[in-house]
Length: 233
Image (cartoon, rainbow, N blue to C red; front, side, top):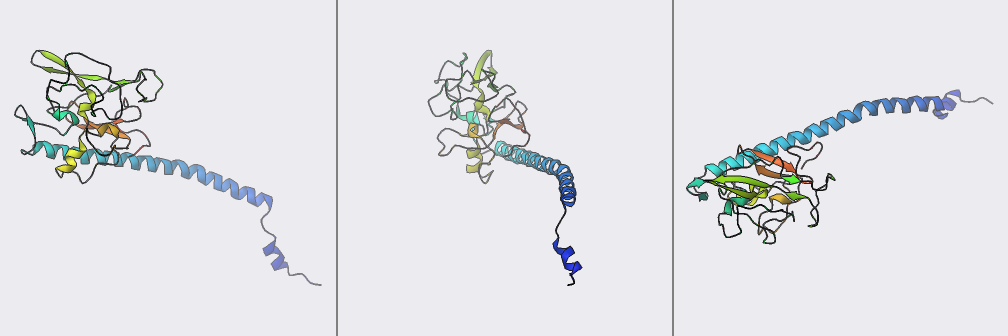
């Protein structure tokens, strides 16, 4: 009886050594490819963050330059949440307080500070959130020692302490006036204004700094300024 040697060779499959060689080759390729893909995805998210920042800055500048928008003491206002806080009836604005975050600071349940310059300038929020228990996590349950800082504002000879959150961008004002088509997906709950029907759920609180430039704070621990590696929106 004569065997078909060609058929036998075709059907014998791979040897263990051949499988090991193939697996080793795949491992090497994965070791090369995975970091490259991760770096590409990370840089892509960072580019998206930069593009978002530029887009918001353009909208903010356009809002400011429109003579039809609200003014305070004759000067144009930026579209920040605290632009409407011009009444001193809220409290004694020359004192400080511990501001506990409740993810909706302007709903009447938290202390609201008089903003003596309204939306006429930004603020330096480099230390906008105090990690009171040093656990690296933002706690918002109301019992945490974590808290927002206040921003010192001088008007005349008097120093006022303004809620840091007043400098977050009011996206609903930008959308209503046609400078943005919609609230950015990247906007966090810190950008949610009083009376909003929805709470934003993005990763960044966009605000206006002391040079009137749009910046962001990473919402899960808002002491990290700018782009947070690997996170967008």
